[in-house]
Length: 89
View 1 (tube, one colour):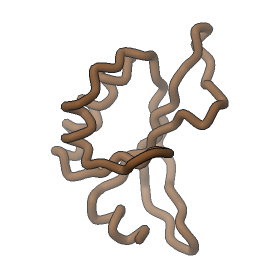
View 2 (cartoon, one colour):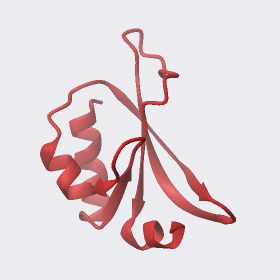
View 3 (cartoon, helix red, strand yellow):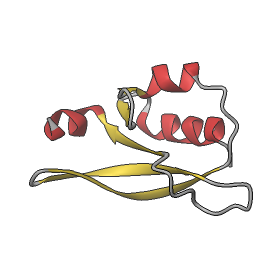
């Protein structure tokens, strides 16, 4: 699936009540999805985000290279609920 499709799937699940955590600026899921027209291929994986002693559930979006393998350049996005984002501090 491509990034735009993945964001739409996540958006349906969270109803825009989520935050996209990236290496750059964190943004609300709805804003991030509306501003994205990226069609790069991605892989979704469910896991956790950790901050200190706190862990919260997250959906991780891994970008794939041209051969369909996960890139190892730090280009991953994590999506957590807005409530859990606040818990992370």
